[in-house]
Amino acid sequence: MSSEYKLSQLCAQAHEALAFALFTSADEVLRDLLVLSVSPGRGAGRLRVYVSAETESIEDLDYVVDKLEHAKGYLREELARWTQRKRVPDLEFVAMAWAG
Image (cartoon, rainbow, N blue to C red; front, side, top):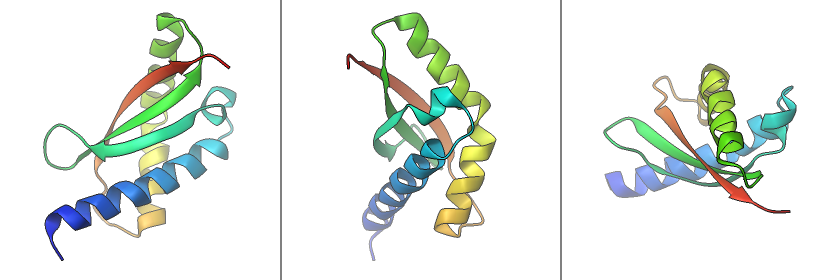
């Protein structure tokens, strides 16, 4: 298997794991997020997670990213459990707005 295929597979697994972790989160802000995609991040061992939030405010998007950063440990634990990996990539978050 090529490393490109393995990375693609990891991104798909991360998408599922993070979508489930956010959906089942105790935090209302996180529960309302939609994982749009997961792609390789900057540098080795990083994944970039794109989420969508129902807002039009830049300040709200910054708040969403702060919430995700605060929950990063929990999200990485869930990713490790879901993918059964010992080494879990670091996560970087990009929040995008959508008007519902």
